Length: 151
Length: 68
Picture 1 (cartoon, rainbow over the protein chains, first blue to last red):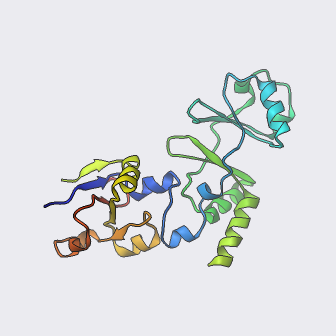
Picture 2 (picture 1 turned 90 degrees about the vertical axis):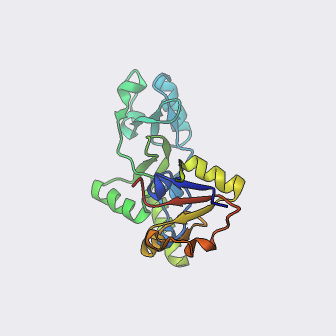
Picture 3 (picture 1 turned 180 degrees about the vertical axis):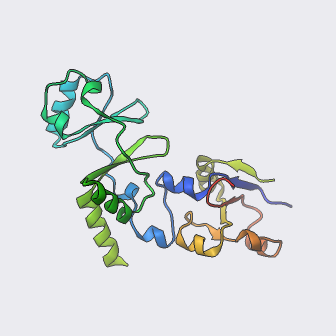
């Protein structure tokens, strides 16, 4: 009797890029997908901008991601947009195509990237552009310190 | 020839049929990172003898780094 045999053609690069669980030495360093805050505010292009800004401010956030119905990231409303009521639509107020990282990137590498760009947060998306969440530098530092203590 | 599958099918086969995951990369790469529960049989060592450690009653899913 032979084996019921399959081949996972996209392999572990694909697995890791979707933030799925992993084992091994690299898994000891938390990944962006594990540290990312998942319930980051989102809106769609057709949402009323002023309602969005009010909702985001009320929730205590200083950013909001503009996404499609299936959470593909189109843009980001940052601090400047949230502090201003000058624009009339979400599309005009947003910054298009924000830089993102995959969930599999280690937070040590992500923190280095944040330092290089002077950023305190970084959005995390799947390879097909869907929003996973947002990594804050403070959370990344805590997770890295915790991993070091437990090593 | 093994049937090609995607990650959703990998998860389904592991959850529903207790499929066995086999990473065929060299052991240093396996040690760095692998799928949960996967065992390592490097491609160069994959033969009748090393395959004996697999359970023939359960599906076997092989994988490497990416599409080769």
